[in-house]
Image 1 (cartoon, rainbow, N blue to C red):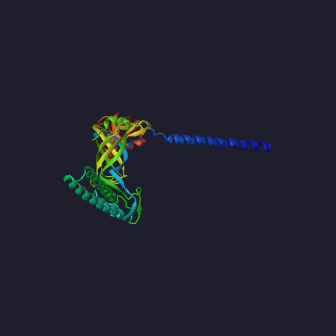
Image 2 (image 1 turned 30 degrees about the horizontal axis):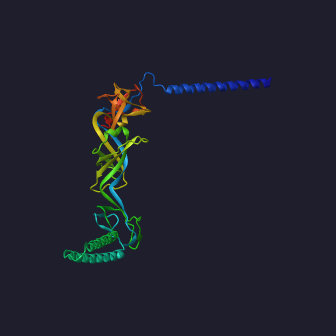
Image 3 (image 1 turned 90 degrees about the vertical axis):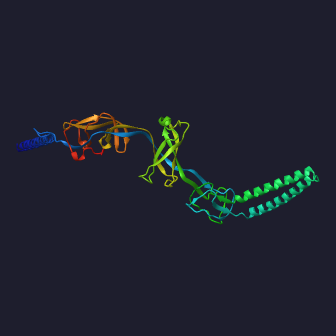
Length: 363
């Protein structure tokens, strides 16, 4: 009997504990639910927001592309003959003019050959003069005169050949420009594949671009191109299109464009990365700060404020200009659009306009 009472007592205790736990859970859930509900008889707290009214601004129909800046004229300086270097007047990084001597090779043998050829030419000239005098006196045959003339012509050719061989021993600048690094010293033996340095004409630079085919009929020579480079982030360089490719590449569906930029101050150098911009036309449109535009997947919308409430509106976007975006549909001039504080808004939520941040982005 005592054992039975103990079992019954234990069961009652378990039931009591379970009931207490159930009551506690229900109490906690009801408390959390009540905490998430606005106070009875009260209103939802208004969200402070900054607003801006759309204004008409100038936008542009344009296309941007990247490219690499290179000199219009740039060549490797290599000797036309092999030989031992005797003198290197060229200095790395210096400006040179057309005809300036850059390198000289040992030319002793060529000078000797030229002297011999000139002596032979002198003898041939004297012989020709003598035969011509005899021919005038009718004491020389026509065949002798023709032979003397042929000998003179051959001697003259030998002199020209010897002079050319001597000139090949001296390298000169083919045009005005700036030298790259010069890594050759006197005493070195060079061949026709040896590169002494690189000569670049930095007065005019060019950049090659690849543009989508939809712009093919809008690009033409003479069109203005704006360039910017990381080396000068605050500067904009202006050039013009010089060549438009004659066809569209089937793989990329793009076409090539070459533009040239005047570089009188030599700020641009070969190899620079360039961001380019071609403007086709300009127009006026309604502008909003980028911060006002909210994106969800492929949809874009904004919040407007009227009578103290937020209203969510789907919008269509157009071009951009700096930190402004064109809105082509969904808002009108005079609408009050939320710029800051929209991250906690929902359609119909009460709002309070913070005047200290109003019209942010358009000023």
